Amino acid sequence: MANCELCERMGLVALADHAHHKFSQSRENRKLYPEFIDHPDNIMYLCYDHHLNKSIPKWSEIYFCMHFEIKPRSISGMELSKKFDPWWGE
Image 1 (tube, rainbow, N blue to C red):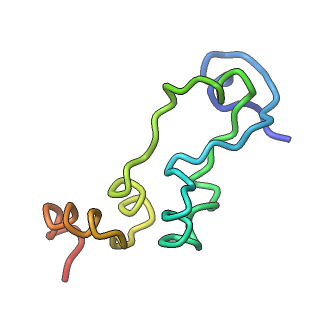
Image 2: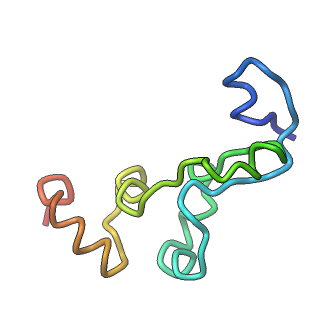
C-alpha cells in the first residue's frame, strides 16, 4: 500500500486508501481514453481525508492529452486543441 501523496508533501505519513483520477473517470472519458484512464500517471493515491477534500485539482482534457502526447478525442477537446496546432501537428 502506498502513502498519501498530499500528506507526504506536508511531511506527514498516512496510508493511501483511495485512488484519485486526475482526469475524471466518467463514462464518456472511459470510452474515449480506455488505455489511459487508469494509467499510473493519471492516478494520485490519497488518504480518506484528502480524497474527501473536493478542492483537489483535476486535469483538463487538453492537459491530460498533452501529458500522454495524444490528440483529444472529444468534439470539444478537438475544437480547443486547434489553439495548440503547432504542438499537435497535422
